[in-house]
Amino acid sequence: MSEYGIILQFLSWTLIAGGTFFVVIGAIGTLRFPDFWPRLHAASITESGGVILLLAGLCLHAGWTLVMLKLIFIGVFLLITGPTSTHAIANAALVSGLRPKSQSVAPNKADDESS
Amino acid sequence: MIFALAGFGILLAMVLVLIRLIKGPTLYDRVLAVNSFGTHTVLLIGVVGFWNGRPDFLDIALLYALINFVGTIAVLKFFRYRAIGDVMWTPPEKDKDA
Image 1 (cartoon, each protein chain N blue to C red):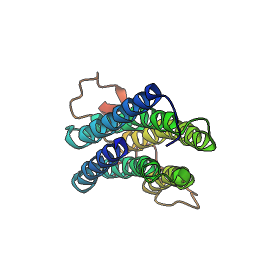
Image 2 (spheres, each protein chain N blue to C red):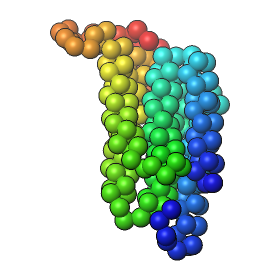
Image 3 (cartoon, rainbow over the protein chains, first blue to last red):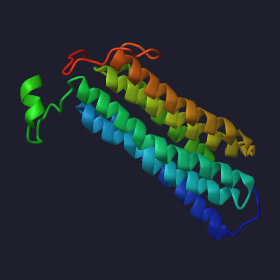
């Protein structure tokens, strides 16, 4: 454990706990939401919230070392590919005809033809 | 100590996502679950690396994040065009295969 102030340790611990909280919440949402589209939203909670907080907490714990640079690389990469892969999945599902069950959104023209 | 909490939290999240992977009615639920499981693995590698005091596992985590993304896109492309490599034909305008 590199020597650093108690405040820094407290901060890193809260960030890591927060990150874990977001990861678990996202996973619970992915499991329990009724339809595919809300699950997509829940899964992206872990992709964004969980990753940012958890990696920030690890960065604080690591201090100004090469490890922090690697963590930043991982964080930047995950924040770029997370939404991209979520978009790819959503696009593939939409194109293949998977529509939101609740149709709470106004059914647009495309729906009339396909359904 | 906090790393233990984070590690077990991420493991719990992985189990939940695995249940979604098995239960997932549509194909895209499963792709979503696998993608989410990959992200959890990246975080778990990072946390456990720090837990054992050997943070040089982060290279593996970064590599895993790269490959997880490519894998998700490959699966989606396969089910979209029925082929990964040589996509010769353009899909019909309103294809119905789920």
